[in-house]
Image (cartoon, rainbow, N blue to C red; front, side, top):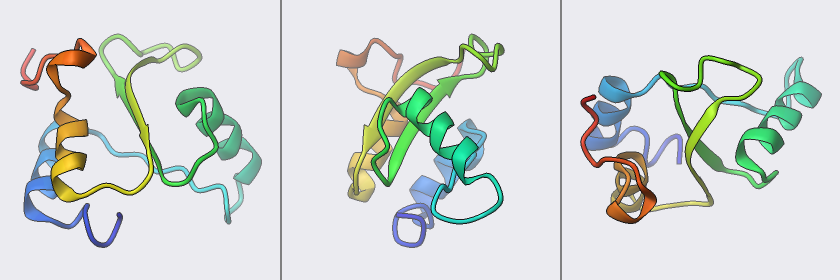
Length: 98
């Protein structure tokens, strides 16, 4: 996903314009246990890859962030963009402007 989907122009533009990106890696690095615990709390899963969208306006409390959407697994460019934008059934507006 990182090399094949995130680099697609539509995805890169959407991520850059509307999101603050953070990546947790728990397979290597100095904070493996902390990152794994945080992923399990936010994603409610230890699957890899896994994506979580947090509302930063409602999620200022780091201990209780407002999770808007979660999804695990590999996706096509179109499916990943759909996940980023939301869809009518998930209760999140499709447009990014507030």
